[in-house]
Length: 248
Image (cartoon, rainbow, N blue to C red):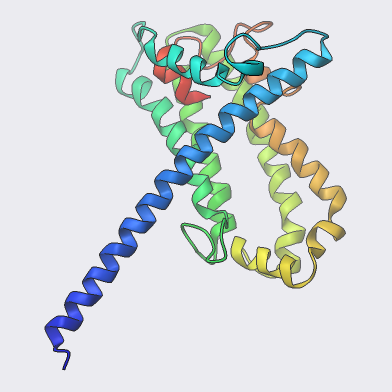
């Protein structure tokens, strides 16, 4: 006969195992994101090199496959330089907060049949809000850097990103209205049961959303916030080493 204490013990054990599994899953997701982003960057550099009729990264490893790893190690090994910022605490915490927010937005996107890491009936709205939080620290990082180029670059970047976030919301609004839900999981289930009707109906909107994502992530040709060649970079002018890596 199972006693009350045994039931409590089993329930606690199951909850602890579930928490451990969730933690392991989150760590694996985190490592996968880092690897995917690193090799997506390598792919992008290869495409740009092909467009410009040059070879791109190809010296480190076969076909340059170890180039992202070497770039990451190089950034981690560089000296951290802090050039008398206005507010030291904000100067140091800004890149770490931006990095945290970039990982936070993945917690609301369904990646399995059980949904996302964080399932919420307003997950799409929270996802939009979470993505906007990094803008404040991008702006603050430029202001507290005590550098005119950083301040101007921060304002330039914020104006570009913020203006297109409004466009992104209006592009997502028809999908929200059609599914009558702010939940990512509900929208995905709706697509599965109705043969991906969202993509079929809103194919033109999906193209616009892709362009807005390029703008949001400052990718070419919308890379003015990070234009180090023609506009002396931006908010990240005074950052180096691991802080610089966390911004990107």
